[in-house]
Picture 1 (cartoon, helix red, strand yellow):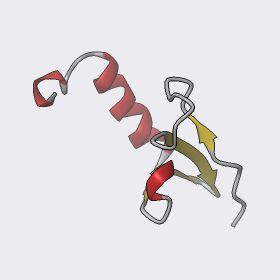
Picture 2 (spheres, rainbow, N blue to C red):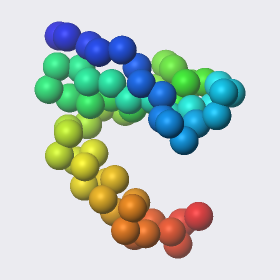
Picture 3 (cartoon, rainbow, N blue to C red):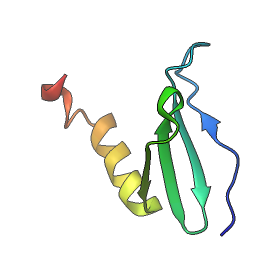
Amino acid sequence: MTYTEWQKSSFSGSGSECVEVRTAGRAVELRESDEGHLTIHTTPAALATLLHGVKAGEFDHHA
């Protein structure tokens, strides 16, 4: 399986608590940089659907 380098979110500061993403074959992986051993594996389509919902404010009531 081919992995790309972890990419840190542009919204993250210079600290260690950052969201990172990379591709792993046909999957997408997400992690928090300070908890690198915990990784979420998903598909590009599922991630796109989640991001669309976040941008649309569908999850604001959880904040």
